[in-house]
Image (cartoon, rainbow, N blue to C red; front, side, top):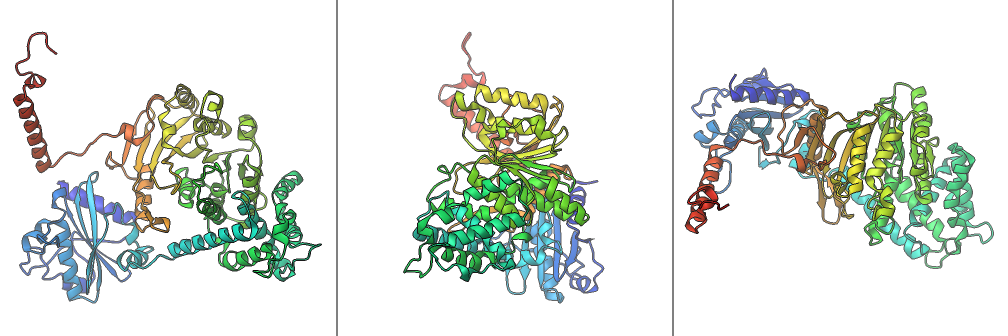
Length: 638
């Protein structure tokens, strides 16, 4: 089988994966056959036979493949894609665009995605271009056809071709603007500190839950005896009781964090400029702009976490004063995929922060549960978390309640004070963690290193369980003697499955370059075990001015490609993306350490490289350094 036929089969597999029914070198749709009847790429007026043709909703996909990567596209001097007979015959994208124009001219189909694909299964470029009646638009390269499935193609067309704003991007912008305004209100009217703002927000949101049971905002009258804070506090007490938060010590610990709303005079005194107390003003704002505007139970996104992150950002800080780095929702959801989270799992986050990992895991398990009994069991017995900070613990508890779960086994403790053996008694099968960063600053604090957190987590999970952690890339290097020993201890008792290097802007505004490490607990790492190291810096998320980190339509394609490689469903991948290799404790557990260039250069690049070398050698000889190449070497000279 020739190279092009092999590549055709590879493209067919990608189409099948995206559930796209494509015809090879022909189509059963008469209208398209008629349009292609005189569409030969040689432009001789004979029949045209694209490598693949598919109809997805009211779009046509037309695909041309070439086995040589330099046969992707030929352009005119002005940069436009050439449509000369030689170009359309010999180059993939040119031929695909030619077919697309013939389809638009000769059929009722007026929206065509033309794909020029060049290379082989491992090294290739898949380049889409949109052709319509009035315009042609080149699009970014892809690795899968995920965005062109019946489920995604209309969305992709609207947001990538027509450049409409995606609703979730607009929603994020809207929420950020509301968070910024809320921050200003909390500062201006409440004189609240950075760590106090999210507690006030959480307390009010809990109280607002009680509106369905008779609580009314107009009851907040600014009474000097029965203050607005006291009324809100009673309502949040009711909310905690209604959610069955137990035991009593846990409920009291949460309540203690919220006493500031009744104890702070400035929050409970009517201000002439707003003609109400700041607490009522905040409650009305949250009820109008947040509580009523979003359905908290319908999404895994950590909205309280988002607000908390915004409070940090608008405080002008980088998180250093608060000592927390909140995990973005797309990462918490990715964790569920990387460990193949099932409804039967028991998840554990020992540094749960605002509860983002637990919320993502809970949603994933609930969605795969088979009945209400199983869903009840997930909420009551399959979610465990520890948070050392009282304020973050209160926020996490609130967050879980707002998502319909008051039974989570959250505790406010020091993770390192917990016995791994006792934690295992909970039947923990999956660990998620974003530990505190950069706490091991010297010998005395070495026990607080990220690697120590990882080891303690792995020891707490049942043998055969899975763990995913997100840490700075420096953690996987292991520079110090203690870190090197800890890496050796990890491999002695547990298995490293792989490390994924992430987009440097994942924690936008924080300045931490992160990676995800995935382990199997309780199974020593065999010297023959092959781990995966992935460069996922290009993840489809981009920083936009005044908006922060935004998901582009490329993100679905990149995520699917990552998971295909991670799960082993894609066998051919360039080493520039993933390297599979055995490892040692002394290695840097990062893609950049194991990467090698496995791409065979084309003839042009090979000739250029040889020419560069010969020029370099001649230059060295001319300058009297021919001995570098064994020319005129004197006896005994090195």
